[in-house]
Amino acid sequence: MTQKRIRFESGGVAAEAELLEANAPKATAALWEMLAEPIERKLISAKWSGDVGVLHPGAGPLREVAELENPVTSIYPGAVVMRPRGSEILIGYGVGEYRWAVGVDYTTRLAKIVTNRSEFLSVVARTADQGPSSVVVSRV
Amino acid sequence: MTKLRITIDGVSAVAELKDAAAPAGVAAVVGALPLRTRFVHASRSGNCAVAHDASLQHPSVGIEGQVSMYYPGMLAYDPARGHLVLAYGQGQARSNTGTHWVTYLGDVVENLAELAVKLQDTRDHGALDVRIELGE
Image: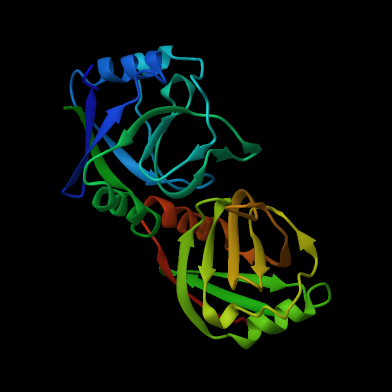
C-alpha cells in the first residue's frame, strides 16, 4: 500500500510527510478528509513543549477525533503529532515533549517528514526567534 | 533597594530587586549592567521571555530565594545558565530535562501591564531588543 503524503509549505520551503495510517487510523483519516482543500494557518513557536512549532487546525473533521491513538509524549525532529480533537498540531524540530502548564501530556503521531526535512525544520525553528510564519498544509 | 529599568521596544518598566533575599544574584546582575541584549520567548517555561547573555552567566553563584513557578511580573535569575527571566503570566523554570530552581530576583513594580504586552509580543512577533540598566 502506498502511504498517503501531506505537504507543508512555509517561508518558501516545502516538505512532504508520510501519514502514519497504521499508527493512527482515525486521526490520519480525519486529517486527510480535512485537507480536501489546502489549509493555511499560523505556525508559532511552542511555549511549553520545547523545540516544536504549533499550528491550530480549527474547525473540521479532526474535532471528532477525541481519543488518542498509540499516544506518545516525545516529539522528535520531523514528527508531526496532534492533540485530541485536533486542538493543536505540532511539528518537532529539536528536543520536544508535549507539555502544558501542569506537566506532560500525550499526543497522537500523525506523520513524519520524509522530504526536505532539515531545510523545512530550519523554517519551523526560526519561529522561536523571529515569530510566527504562515504554513500551508495540503494533500500530495 | 536596588531598582532596574527595563526598556523594550519603547516601553519602560521598573523592577525592585530582592537585595536581602538574593544578594549574590543581585550583585551578579547589577555587575552586568548596563546590558543590551534580546528577550526571546520561552519555549518550555510558559508565559515569559528570557534574556540569555554571557555577562549574566556565573556558575559559582548559587540559587537564592529558591523558586520554580513564575508569577506575572516576576524577575527570575538562573546564574548557571545566564538566564534572566521576566514573566507575564503563568510559567515555570523548565528545561528539556524537567523543572528546575531559579533565584527569585525581584518584581516589576511600575508599568507591568505595558511591559507584559511586549513580553507576549516576543512570541507573537519575534524576539525584541531590551536595555536593562540601574533604576533611579
